[in-house]
Length: 284
Image (cartoon, rainbow, N blue to C red; front, side):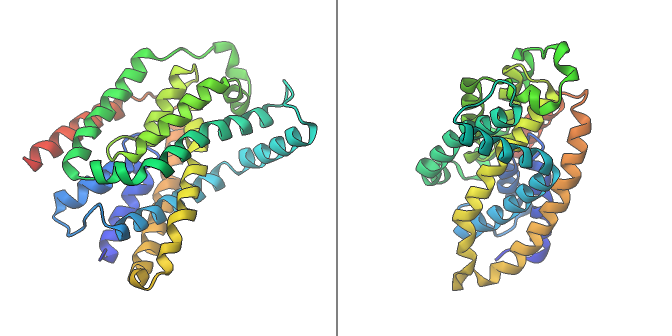
């Protein structure tokens, strides 16, 4: 069982670490082991609890970017009605980029989630992959393409809509890395956005938009398990964890949208290297 106190800690942790590029799943696997909690990461009940906190985070992202999502829906309907994507229709372009970016990660998750979970869900492997996540973040910073300064006057969604379909496919597919505890969904997509020529601010926005459909889809698949008799005792912790995740996610997205005006991924890369190394040493 997950206690209410554990639900509060894990919920607050998930809401923040899902949006910070530091792997929420990795932290949720490593922390209980470090604290000596009797929680097994491979238990289906624990997975359902984590999905509940993820869904709460996704709902916060929908609320935070509701104007963008409304425009995306309008643009998609417009393009379907017109059977074309106009060159000046940034909303439609962004909508189709999100679809293209969501499909590969969704398919990979459906096909390989259980195999990946059974292979990599351990605190020790999560700590190692956390260090790899740090290296990936630092590598993305080193290899990134500089955003064109002339684009800064355009609205953010117009800038993102200029990403090519192939680039969106690659960035979206990188979300599948988040199936491995220790590798960050937002970190992979932010890094991919930087390599595609987006600014830090736009790469973070694109990452948050891409994450939302995937997380909600996981919720549709997993949350009905809460209705099973064997999981009824999980309802309270899942609700508390979800509320805590929503609060920390809102504070985190507010912070990151300001931070990435001038900040980079380097501090998060250094943090992941240090946290993964310390956890690995602790497990030894």
